[in-house]
Image 1 (spheres, helix red, strand yellow):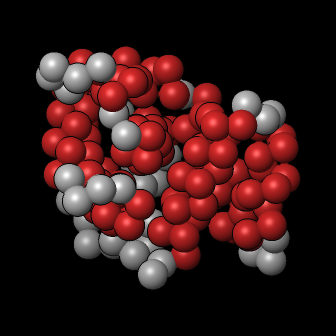
Image 2 (cartoon, rainbow, N blue to C red):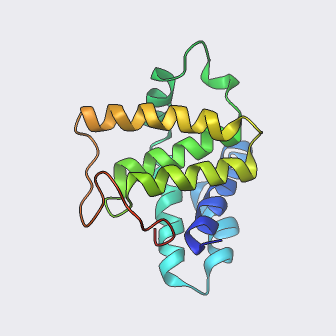
Length: 157
C-alpha cells in the first residue's frame, strides 16, 4: 500500500472522528493525523492539508454530491462513503498536482477497504458525475504532466 493511500485512510478516520465527536480541527490534527506521520514531514503536510481542505469544503462537496445522487438524501449515504467523496472532491478542487484518475482510483480503494460491498460502485458513479461537472464548469485546475486526462502514476500521488 502506498504511503499516500495511508494518508487518505487516516484522513478518512480523522473526518469520521471530527464529525462524530464535534472536537476541534486542532484536536483531531493533534490526536489522529500528527501521531501517524510525525516522522515524515512530507506525508504529514499532505495529511494535514488534505484533512483541512476536506473538512473545510464539506458543504461544497455535499452540494456537488447531492446533485448527482438520485432519490437519495445526503443523510442516507453511509458516512464512510460520504467522507471518501469529500476527500476526493477536495483533491479534485484543491490539489493541482494530483491527476483525477489517481484520485478516482484511490477513492475506490479506500471505499473498498472501509465501506460496504456497494461502496466502490456508488463512489465511482458519484465521482464520475462530479468530475464531469467540474470539468464542464472549468472549476478544476490541474497542472503538470499527465494531470488533465490520463496518468500512469497511480502510486506516486
